Structures are given as C-alpha cells and as structure tokens.
Image (cartoon, rainbow, N blue to C red; front, side, top):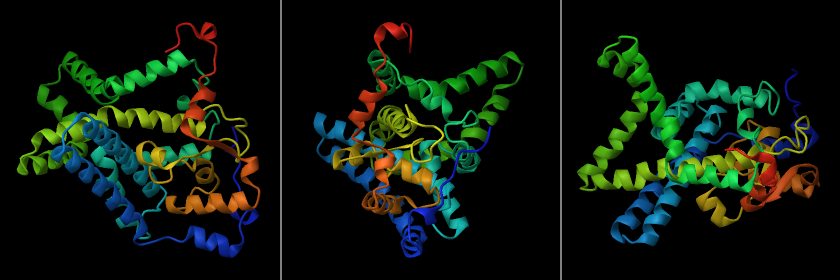
Length: 322
C-alpha cells in the first residue's frame, strides 16, 4: 500500500511564516517538561496540605493529565523537537518524560514514524485504535469504566508480566531468570518510580506516591489516553486526504488542564507538518484559519462533541461489542 499523502508547507505558508513556525528552541521544550513536573508536585502538595475529596479528585485528574503531558513531550522528542541537540533531546525525552510513565523513546520512535508514514492505511500500527469506531454508547461507557477502575492499567501494565512469569515457570525457567527478563524490559520504569517513592518517603509522604502518582497513572491517565486516541483518528471522513485523516479538536481551558495537555489537540496540524514543535501548532492553526484552510480540515469543537460523533452506532447493531 502506498504511504499516506504528504503536504508541502510551501503550499500553506510563506517562507517567513514557515521559518518562524519550524525554528527549534533550546529552552521551550525544556520549559514544558519542567512545567509538567512542577504542576504534578504542586497539585500533590495542595492535596496533601488540604486533603478533602475535592482536592484529592482534582489532584488525580490534574496529575494524570500531566502524566499524559510527559508522554506527549516524549512524542515531541521522538520527532526531535524538544531540543536542537539530539543527545539532550533524547535524554530528556527518555528519562524525564517517557520512562517515569512507562514509555520507551527508542522503541516508540520507529513505531510512531511508521504511523506517520502510513496514517490510517493498513500498515498503520495505530490503526487498531481507531478501527473499532463508531461504537455504541454502552460500549464506550464500558471502556471508560475499565479505564477509571484500573482494569485497563492492569491489563496493559501488569497482566503481561504475570503471563510471562507463568510461561517461564512452565518452560522450566528459574524465578531469577524470569525476573531478570522482566527487569530488562521494565527496569528503567521501576527505577524512576523507586526514585519518586524514595523522594516522597524522605519527606515523610510515602503514601502520596501511591495516592498521587500511581493512582492517576492507573486511572485518569488510561482514560484520557483513550480519549486522545479517539479524538485523533476515530471516524475520519477521508483516510486518503492529509487534511482529513487526523482530527484537530478545539479545546477550552478546562479540557487543556484535564484532558489535552501541551497542544496535543492540534493533531491534524501535527500530521500535516509532523516536525513542528508542539508549541508552534496553535500558531499554525491560527494561520491556517486566517487562510481559510481549516474549513477543509477535520476540526471539531470539544471532546464531548467528538465522543458523541464516535458513539452513534445503534445498540441493536452491536450486541456483544466491548
């Protein structure tokens, strides 16, 4: 199958506009990474000092959103956009963004570039994320419940290693051999999380790791990751049109704070110009709007609007759907 059709920036921007949009920064990406961690620890501190149901729930949502933000910034690092020095870019993307939330930059980069090369084509490795849609409202509700109750986290992050342990024991491997294999795959994630646990324990707040880091990672993070995946590519109007095989969702400040961090909602612009740093995407969107281009793009307002459009399948037509 041919690769997805690409667009030429010169068809949409003047040389001066493109130069301003595409310039790399030695500080903006690092500032966004710092912002993510500052927000995480600030939300944690507020909930620790003023512990009540409202602050706890808000902290879980805000921290989970910044955890997704770290994954988004690792995604920017996969495109070489966090820092102009590739060594700095990859170190920050790997150890300050990806590894703490269980992502691996070196494995993610070729996978993700394959997604860009074959967007919404049969060779797209992310096609399975959008293929189940449209679905029914009841099916979407079940997915949301699984995310918020930790079932998705358990299935994705725990179950594979329980299965590997059982398979290894059945094959006659020792416990140490099995654990060594698991450590080779998950060691950096565990190291980062042990550092977080140790730091909070030294502050006398060991329990805050479980309440305000692990719980968001197991609940809110999977949910908004699903919402992001749905909004980006589900139910596209034309998988062969580079302006309509990815969706931009205009998000308000609440959605940006709790669902869509660091300009991830400008996904159509990202696919059109995949090497733009994330902080340039709002400006690119504004320029495209002024030129009348966004009228030809797949653009929606608000994540509820998107969810309504992808859960329109009649219940009777999807009996047994998950």
